[in-house]
Image (cartoon, rainbow, N blue to C red; front, side):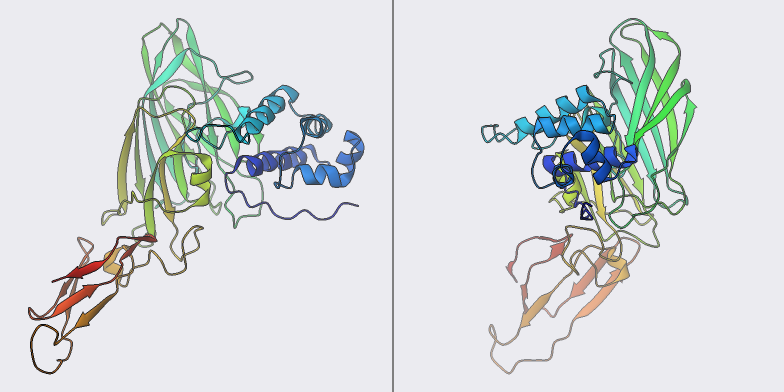
Length: 394
């Protein structure tokens, strides 16, 4: 009997992403690792090792694993080849070190987010591109909702349907039932086909009111609803796999439970999205809990959006206590520390420290007032775990 398999730390690296999808394939097949080993004619330890995420299995083992689980051999051969190329030491440094499998090249919702989707049962098809895409993520609503609006442009005559997809990864602390997502097309066509080929990955085919000619634009909007109680990973990312000219994202956090930190993901490979380490490009929600950001001329295969540190300090990538504020009025701006020195610039004994602190909750500002004769040495200020530098200021 095979040993119980350890949980997989999904950090976005190509080998662990490959192992994640192998595990998902086995789970959907209903086979135990012992049954999978017998059916693939490999030892149980071999098929378990293939999905361990420590190294990329050989192509022969991979195809035997997939064949036993009745997966798509062509897509898995393509996926294995792409990952193998990324692991080649001769790959230029500028090449992204992550790749999505052929069946999961769609938006990432937590990744709540969006990607320009692939064709339904084939390789990505030409025929259209995204001129503009806007999304509103309502984290202050129960259940959580996303409103998405797209304007697409046909590049060939006869475009009659668009396949859209969303990836809803499992929250690290959510080991419950399968992921669920409700779709509703608000206008711009009709949803005729839906499917969920893998856990957390959803596809739907939108039939257009009439076939488009090359150069024609079409607008549609949809609402995505996450069932109550189902947690989402703390990011919303648009990962285009075809031309995408403009993306605007608005997120409305719960103002009564604001995030500890929010940072922008720009030109982000999958590893950076999943690691959860704050970038230097941060954004502060307004007093209603809203942020708005936009991107232009995005590069295919890379992520664009935001990630946030959840209230309570449970988000990965942050040190305990970093990114928190000393008062509610600073809205998670960070931890501020300081020291004061007396007597160095004027004679006489040191005097007691007299500092006035006022907090403006409406503008999320904290004002510190010091005596005019006091010299202040400013220590590092941590904003979302990022030190801003330090030095003496008069």
